[in-house]
Image (cartoon, rainbow, N blue to C red):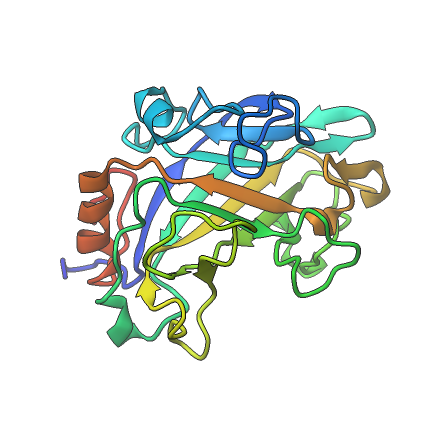
Length: 256
C-alpha cells in the first residue's frame, strides 16, 4: 500500500444528471412512456430500448468517461416543479463483508442490472432502504421519508445496492432476487459472489418543509435506484484489483 494511502476499499464515478424520461429499460424494457418519470445519470443515450450494446456505444456525463453505465431514480418534485440533483456521486465500495473476504471480490459483470429500494412501498418498512438526510446539517438525522433541512443546506439521498451476486443471472424477474445483501459479514450461500457495493449519493438543491416534496413514484420512502452496468470489462477488473481487493481508496481515474 502506498505511504499515506487511506485504507478504504473505494473507487468513484461522478455522473451528473443527463435527461428525464418516463422510461425504464430494466423494469419495462421496450415500452417508451411505460414508467413514472425518471431522472437519468451517466449514459446520455438511455431510454426504454437501451441494452448493453447501445450503452457501450453511448456517451456519458460520468467522470471517468470510461464509465458508460446508466443510473436512474424517480424524479423529485417540489410542488409541480422537477428538481434535479446537483451532486451525483456513485461510490463503488468494498464494505459489508469481512476484510479477509474483500480479497475475493469479483468485478461487477458487464450487463448486470440491479434495482434497490422499493418503488411500491406503502410505508417506510425494511424494503425501503434509501435514506434522506441534510448536507451539512447532521443534527437533523436521517429518515426513510423526506426530512426538513435548514435553509442553506441541501436534501440528500443515500442508497446502498446489494453486492452479493448469485454468479449466473444478470437480471431476475423482480430485478432483485439475483442479488442479496451480506449477512453477518459474508455473502449467503445462495449468492456466493462478492462484487463491489454501489452506493448512490444524490444532493438536491432544496430545503425546508418536506410536505412540498414528492417523488414520481410517491412519498419519500418509495425512493429507489436502478443500475445498468456498462463499465468496460477490463476497466472494472482493474479497479477491483487495484482498489477493492487491497482495500485502497482510489480516485476517479481508478488509481490510489
